Image (cartoon, rainbow, N blue to C red; front, side, top):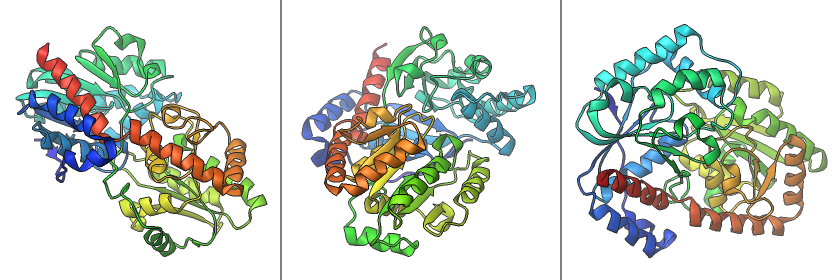
Length: 413
């Protein structure tokens, strides 16, 4: 049996003051016709990364409106996650491809997980490539199957995509963040849905902290709260370009010597190369005492991330590839000025020069950081616009509504 994930309790009505009564009423109307629907979310890990953060809110909200929603994680060992991390990187454009032996490992674990999966579901939602082959090995275990892709497939390695396609064909519905992520080979396979993810504004990572509480938390990690702070919150991953953030910080420091940098991330269980790049980032920082490199093993959890984002003068997500980048919406929700890489789903969240800035290099990132640090009024204007943009487009109740619309269509098909 696959491992179930325990989630807390959430109530849709608690979000009404943030998203508006009309959206809550629309959700309840859709849910009334779906009571008792058995839905399973299947993913690779319950910790670290955007997928798990989404599901910790989405699953209890589905339950609150009457869906019998569950979340299970697949079985895997290091050899499997080494292979799937290569798939992840390769599907985002890395030239490296898997060996035949690694594809055999991928196929073997998907077969194992298919055998361990309970049957009797109305809908199974498979998240990302790791468990993508479960459906083809056990299609009878659910009436409907959906593949939800969270990564940037705009420039996939053709060899990897070709080997993965037999695992992701045959689903009824496909969900992508953006239309340019949809492989041409899937456009005739099933219904394509373009649905960006969302954040939970009431989760510990996003709930309102007082300035005093945020400052106190940052102080515990050696941040001088009287000096300006630049911060990036993300996995330690080459696609997130933490070294490029350090380069930008060094340019800023030439003009504003008192500036500090915090690189804050979590080490995910399905990312075995994460420690290698964490160590590479430490080496690139070269012992600078004003660069704080922190992760969940330094007791950095949701509240601490919240505090770093709320206390920062400039928030950055300088990705070079990015499926969506939930940390962008999280940072914008704090009302702080944000600079993001002009890639993937980041431009959906940052409207350049209105809700933040989009950049393509460390030099551009430094230039925009200096602009914000030297003009606090500008930073406040960007922060207010960014928060309202997230309120309108990227809060979890909107995502719940989108899922209920898909379930309704499946039920009527």
